[in-house]
Image (cartoon, rainbow, N blue to C red; front, side, top):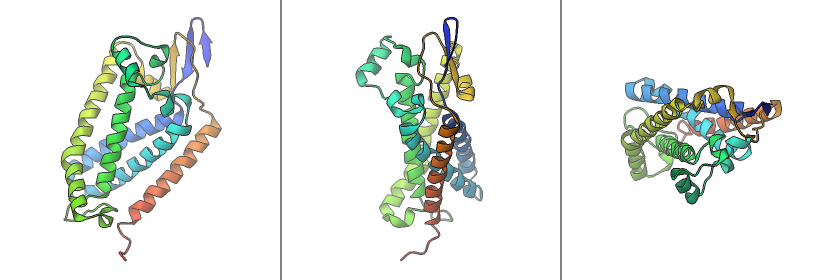
Length: 229
């Protein structure tokens, strides 16, 4: 953490968290485009989905062992804290990582992304494409998953993304440099705060974790082609 005069530069978002954020954005845009086009683009839709699954699995683990401000423990707030925040009772740490409202947005996006990926893996369009887990569940479950994935979940996610973008624009206009912090990782604060660990060792650990998550998701993707016994 660097300090200049009355300001303190803090590494808030470690490199793995930043790569996760921008990688997830690219994949979600890719999913929207390929899902809208349909046809042969669905092959890409599946691979974007598998990449999102790998990223989400990584984020679950990184939320436990990652940099200080990337850990879920740093932005899990009690209902009373959220209410007090809405009443204008702000704490210094609320301006460092995720605020109580920002944390709610993050958990909502992660939760519905998990639901969207899971439902996609159990979906079947009854034409040419089926998720790798569709053959392991009942026809009723496949029907529910397919309907949720195509007609419900994606619209909930789009609404959450619009709200997320709206919040970013709102806070940016109030001179909260959210986008730049997610690009270079640092924030300049009035008060001192703990920095997230972001060194060669932690980055290597993140790469290993992501590789293991990707390998697990790839194995799941092969189940669609495996013979039934």
